[in-house]
Amino acid sequence: MHENTCTTHEITLFGTTTVAVDGRTVSGPALGGAKPRQVLELLAVADGAPVTKDRLVELLWGDEAPASAVATLESYVCVVRRAIGTPGAGRDSVVRTTSAGYRLDTSRVVVDRSECLSLLERSTGASPQEAVRMVREALRLARSPLLASETRSAWADRERDVVTTRLAEACAVVAGRALDAGDVAAATELSARAADLAPFDERAATVRMAALEATGRRAEALRCYLDLRRRLVDELGVEPGAEARAGYLRLLAGSGDAVTETPSRTEIAALLELLRETLGRVPGLDPAPVDRAIGSVASTALALL
Image 1 (spheres, one colour):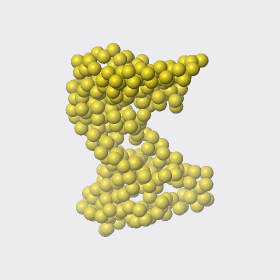
Image 2 (image 1 turned 180 degrees about the vertical axis):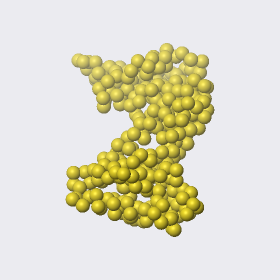
Image 3 (image 1 turned 30 degrees about the vertical axis):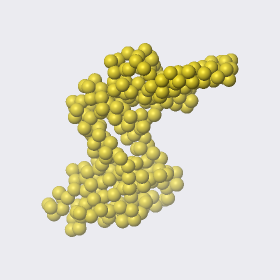
Image 4 (image 1 turned 90 degrees about the vertical axis):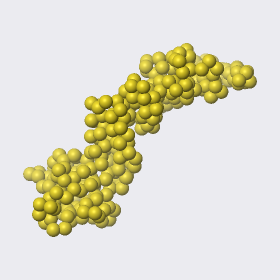
């Protein structure tokens, strides 16, 4: 019995939900069907905290819970215990019964989502180098969509939003710390990941602009600002904040040791596109002559390179 008690269950929630135990992997129909799988997932995202039967019923069925919902839930728990149980363990299951519901025994269960969030939390107190390593490991764990088996559950959507937000925030913060520590490559990498996860995150865009500027890639930095501004204006109706604008103005001023004197074609194209967008938002301004004038300037500038 003691040997069975020490068995570790590894639950994977990123991608298809699976449980690895005693050298076997349980997933799909082997978990007992959609509802038993959801029971396991809901307990797994609770990080060991008890989840009441009423709460599980609410999340599983919403307003369409049958009269026999609690009894049916209890049968689902039995299905899960059989599916992921250790042979010979008897009633010693990692799905524990509490006074009002159920919880997972986290001393015997490892959940990849929990590991991911733990890495992000611990990165805040780590050195810049160690923080970069932790965030990269968290990103590796989260390389597949969270709860991919759940495409129509509001609770799963909320969980995905939480994890995505935490990942984006950590990537942006650690990218900034890496840049301050002189690790431009890590700052560029993590700020790009933050921007992918949260396209409207100005902090991530600002760090990415600074990292690109530090490597002499001013055209890409300008493009980063241009893309950010377009998203904010078109979808939210707001301009970038002070920090992002300051980074943009620094780029225009050409400050920084890594900036070359001669702009590239890409850089000129980005600047001209930004100018066209900006002028196009001036009330009463006819866009046709503006486009012709900008096109003429572009042709002349590109011919000189």
